[in-house]
Length: 164
Image 1 (cartoon, rainbow, N blue to C red):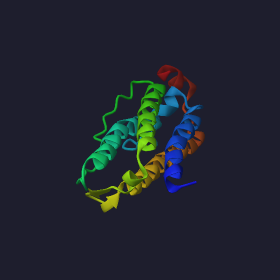
Image 2 (tube, rainbow, N blue to C red):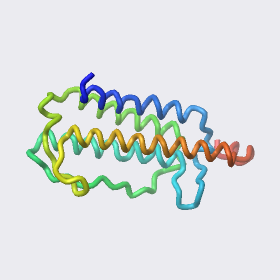
Image 3 (cartoon, rainbow, N blue to C red):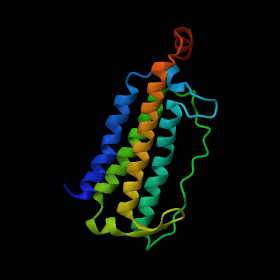
């Protein structure tokens, strides 16, 4: 398997891994925070859905321009957590499938196209796909940790039913 194939498969596997991690999560659990300023599971998924189209726009720009200076992708937060967790997941899935389709359509030479990032400096498109895979893994681990904490601090039945 080539590095390109591995990266694309890693991006696709995030969809399977995320769906598996969220399958047993109730509405109350999705909104539980271990601390007032910490993210809940729903916020993590909303964040993934938010950054995905911005990331795809960056990749498209790298292919279209010669060594573009790209911006840091910042998430201002304030996601609509009144939306069900499944809506955030489905939004992310649709956006990720678009990114994967774009990556599959690239020529091998496109993976070597250069860009300048404000944090990472000069790099190649393939390096930034790797960085985004690491970003996925970081947030999947965040959800794993939140689920582990929920096992220790379960949501009371009444609260969960009220949020469903």
